Length: 358
Length: 265
Image: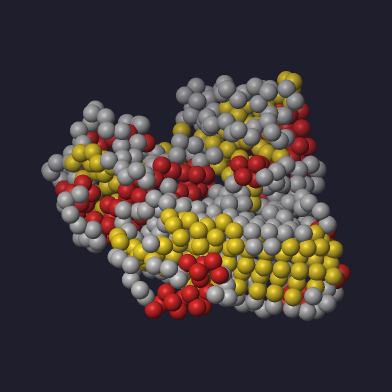
């Protein structure tokens, strides 16, 4: 474990004291990043409540592309295991689903349960990279992007457009499915596109079964959504400035707050890897980062404290994308590293001792 | 006429939800000065930020604007508010009646959920003017929103009823519209009317058109002439647009498809 204050190595007690001083002096503090285990997220929400700060996960764009559509019209979703076990038609949207091992895993198996058991599995793609590694039928996206393409496809699926267009053929294949699944990354499709897609899935469910398999962001955003919901009753971008959790995705967008000069101090929480924000260093910041990460250095921020990395040298509850749940992850090689939750709790205790309370 | 004069730069965003002529009419200036408007734990009050002069009338002038003035005229139900300068997000949110005028520019979500009255922005409006906020059922919901300058992206997103006039608009104007009328005297950005169910979009020109809008000719409609008559007092440029021949497109065929887009032929 290590800590730095204003670039100089310091012991953790001194860094915690300096962090409490920095945050206590601020008017509009923001807690950003939140790429961390659930116990650290919980400690961050508690600290924000004490401090009157707002919170914004680095996964915000992905989380809100999904939540915006979900809050307006709901969603019909399934899991990875159900997709592999039951789907006879899988539509893969855009490029991002091809990044991991998911598509190969889906392609290797055939439906073994349910209505399509024993049948074949057809893979279709829309706007994908069109690589030849996995056999699939590829459809090109419109020039306007995935959202426009999904609207066009839905018009054919509804029968509002007709003809021998490629999307008419794709729509026929979707309706022919016994158990269909669309795989997509919400951030890549965008909020408008996700809402259109969920409308298409609802249309398809008039006559067959069709679901969405959404890819989680890689920065614990799904865990933050759940934790924020059970802690505040709201989605993650909440502020405690007025003694109660207020949800406002525009007002509490940390990049906007910092660019507009509204936030005057920040705490960057990333015990797990997260893309370094452009604003780091532009305002007084406390960085709580994983041991051994590129940010674990004195010049990252005014105050830097390193903590154990969940799943590496400390245990922690993390989003498990394969299972679609929060699950405990054992450390690969446990050390006596301090946890992010412990550091955040100590900063909060010092703030309370100083009489800071929202 | 009551007056609030902004003293200087605001140290934080402020929320003027509860600052209406009606709310101020029963208060002394000292009492009004103690109303909380801050959004941080410092507890900023109206008196901290503004010089207050009240006369119990139903008109209020805010002298000196700021992009940090949120929810100006929100829930206004009678009287008028005039802001001499800019405002922040959610201008006139949920407003039911009255008159709201901003001489500068407005932030995002101007007129969201407003059910009645007239909102005028003499400068530009940010994204989602007349659009729905997170998890809201509808954007503009019966009020009249006049933007003399340019509107940002998502103008009238999920709008349910009412009229929006603007000088120009960004991308995705009229997206997810449930109903209502948007008239833009200049250009719309790309992909107007994405996911619109019903409603009317009228513009001088547009960017890339969605493949789910189909041309239905250049009809001479009595409705358009009636609309031109009713718009004369609100926006001469928009009313003038309706005098010429208009090409009609029907969409968005991805959804209900009962919306329409008219563009100068």
